[in-house]
Image (cartoon, rainbow, N blue to C red):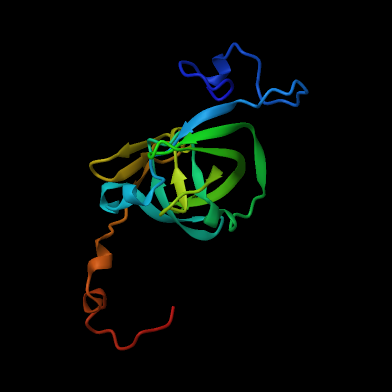
Length: 195
């Protein structure tokens, strides 16, 4: 539950009064539990085992992980400076559990950031966090809101958004980094043009 932080129900079924308001009782604000599994460098040694891609987020190229183990969607602190929307404070801060059993506190969110995926503009709320290796992690909050199904075997994500045509994203292959320079050019290429 995003309201009280307890498991077993969702916020619209919560019987407790809403937490995190402006109060003068001196009690510490509760934090909702959150988790992500892609925080440390050792967890991402083999990117071929993950569903990843490069997309435009707020008009900047971002290295993105689809993470069904993450409760929320996150943005690295280094990439967050490129976001065009100002950050806002969360109503309830997040206590984010990492794979190394550390807990990081997140209290801000960038709302309605543009994400271009498969030539479609989508919106995403991103929580800034000290992430390594990825610019953005797409968590279950965004995946479920966009009716996404992740096929881990095929390394693809199928989107079945109501009243829209179904579309599929296939994870990018990482093997291109191992190719020899000569293998990456057409045989009839005459010159190398600057990018």
